[in-house]
Image (cartoon, rainbow, N blue to C red):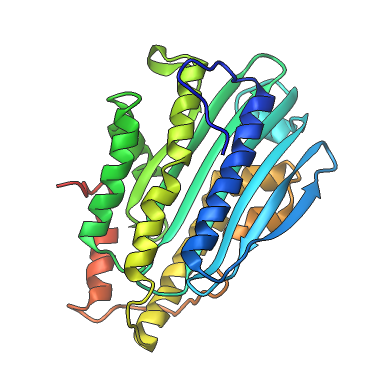
Length: 307
């Protein structure tokens, strides 16, 4: 994968897009090796309004369905999006990598990551992204490992990043109509454009750090739980939690709305949805069960997982 030193200043949009393409390649190679048998299928697409991307989907023995997408699109910013972003309608450029993995084993969590860059010809630009984890069954030691890993990469770039971006994730990945968090959170950030006196080069370095943390946090959890024994009960609970994931992505997720409102490729936008999900009317887990404990933790919005 293409790497940059601290002194590099390659932060023009073409160099950022090339880095994201290399990141997609690197992550796909690592995930294929971790799964063992699954191989990514690639779909190269073009956007009618300008630009395009590479959608890659894997269906393996441990990763039931996963997508690792790269896009670099440009064109005229739709008025609806311009108003939402409080910008004047202008030509825009957006590039990034977006990942969602759904596991076969109910004890292996769903994971999502997005790193992105956006600019307009009026001189506006910013970075955004984040990583969050959605376990079907919460293991506090896994949650601590995940959050500690994210804290370490944040602390390398600014001491305020982890507490600020963790809170942002807790607020963002919240299923308001259920009163539940989508999972155990992570970090989320948007419109980073020189906050805290940091340059564009420094912000790009942070975004690279986040992107390169993905496999470091996910693959150990995959290996830990991929062969855990489970029954139909655990599988049915996994399907129910996947249903909550679908609800968030289709009702609240701004990235989904942005992609559809800018005439993005529907198959790529909706690749985040799981292969199978269930909705059971007024389902209540058995008191004292692992499912009830997980749901209780999901009701604790803002929980600190690092002890």
